[in-house]
Image (cartoon, rainbow, N blue to C red; front, side, top):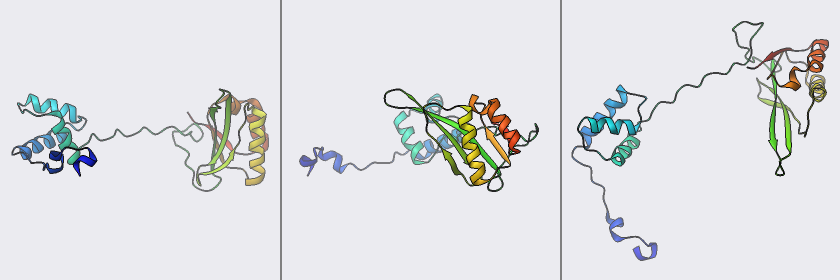
Length: 188
C-alpha cells in the first residue's frame, strides 16, 4: 500500500502526541488574545518568546487555528448614499420604486476596446431595471434609458447616481426637472 501511494510507512503509523505543557501554553495564548485582540498569531508567538517560553511558530499556528482564535475584522465604514435636502439623514429605500440607483460599470474586450454598462437598480427589491452595453455612452443615451424606464415602471421618488459626466450633464438634469420626476441625489 505505501509503495503504491509513494508514502513512507512511518507516515501511516504516526499518532500525534499532546505535549505536557500544551494546556499552560494554550492558557497563555488565550490570555494574550483577550488582552491584545488586534494581535495575530505571529505577534502572540513573539510575546510568548519574550515571556521565556520556547515555542515553535508552527506549533502556535496549529493551536491558534484549532482553538479558533483570530483577529476580529475591523468594521467597514458605511458609504454615503446621499442625503435628504442636505441633512445628515441617509435615504434608505422603503418600498418598490422608492429609490433607484444608476451608475456605469466599465470593462474592456480582449482587443482592449472599452465597454460601458449603464445599470439601473431598484434599491428596495434589488431588481436590475436596465443593463445596456455600449462602446460609448452619452448623456442623451442615459436620458433615453431613464425615459423608457419611467414609462414602463413609473417614476421613482428618489434617483441616486454617482457624479459621472453622463449623469450630471445638463441634458439629463434638465429632463429630470422637466419631467417632474425623481429627486436626484449624488452618492459620494
